[in-house]
Image (cartoon, rainbow, N blue to C red):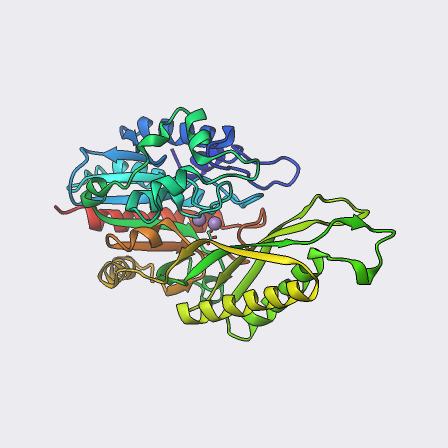
Length: 404
Ligand code: GLV
Ligand code: MN
Ligand code: MN
């Protein structure tokens, strides 16, 4: 099967017909369809699929064992996400197996394809949940109690999908078997296009995190409550958004309020509460911490000014990642020798490879995204570049898994 055939097959799953964006949230019917699709495709290629207790799927080529070379990514999406984020790494992994099998390659080391669950944190708020559970970066008890916007816990969602949430646990034995993890991903940002390169290699990932801010005021009538009498949480929130932009811009950092809920949400009422989520990222941890401190103190000051109470809770934190230099250099040489020189890029986007990097040699390949737009239905990579991604992954897997 070619990359195109695989892509077309997966493309309709979880896509919203009105927006063209993907809503592949973990443990929903769309997610189940994606998991079934991956399992079917892996089994067609003679791979053996073992789901782990944390909701990740592992498809082994050869017997599971030490020194395994892993590749893959995730199939979940942000709300109205693009089709490439995560899915490209999974589809190229399957297409790479096809090409390797056509080349009569048989891995000397075990090879395994993986799809991680809830990478985006779109449903339960904690990104890279599957890989964090695997490595022990999140407490299973805390994870089971995570809730979605409807109040459903992760434990309930997993139970409904037929898994036993009591089994959620770090899996050091599985990690011990992995010799390397290589995640191919659509580029998020626009560095490769101006360089004229189809493929890049990750240098590292900026530290980043999510903070939930709850501004609580007093609901009142929009037509009768005088401006001076109001305790309007929207004002404290709005001022915080503007300051977040300034706090980030002045430090070459990034700060985003992309999700906000005004309660109870009446046009003709001052709202009683605003719940807002801050996503902040920076090139280093000190800059990130200063940016967030600045935003929090503005939120506090404006809350006092408007008679509103504020509570702030960190929902996730991802420390800075520097990918394994030996693996990165090895990949760079393999690609350069094959006539595919790949520039080394830093990114502000989080990935499961970043979580695994704390435990084993990990690396990432990026496929050029001509506009740089991501987390949007406009996210794109050309077919030719995706196929170049498959060829690059094949070269890397041949090199890593070809000798014991
Ligand atoms: C994942 O895509 C993230 O960086 O939010
Ligand atoms: Mn993403
Ligand atoms: Mn991704």
